[in-house]
Length: 225
Image (cartoon, rainbow, N blue to C red; front, side, top):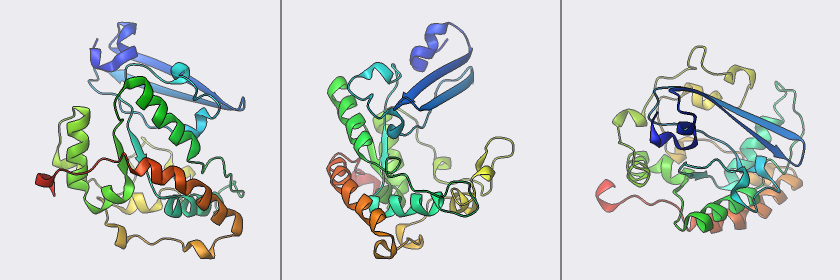
């Protein structure tokens, strides 16, 4: 049993099945299952939108973990989500403004801040892309992880038998072709003015939440730049 596993260690087992069921608006059921064998670290990724209307307390938040945040400008994330959801290769053809909402993320961040008494680690995607080495080093310092250069690069292509990305055309195309972080100017973006009015409105609505969270973002130390 490893104490760093938080609530997982309470099971007193080396191999654990840990099930979380979150219900958002009474309709969405999310089940995260971790199979852990002698693990020293559990790294999970989720989206705050799945906890809509359940962010008044920590009742639905896993205990014993460090909660860190990754944000991206709505001017980039919303068009990207719109393109994915309306990709003709996918069954989904409608854009859900709730899925693009930054309000639950803003609520979750401040819930963790208030309950923990310290500012959660938050990374802005632009900073990460522009200076991945410095940002990842600082992230590791803040979370107690050991930095390795291997965190900055990887083999392109899907990991065999480890992902289901092929089921979602358009969502991970750029990632699968990548072997490391690319600077922002190397990545193309949909022009906001070319998007439908409701999508532009969605960006406008979310921008204040993003700009507020941006004040808390992780900054690289001078020696890392």
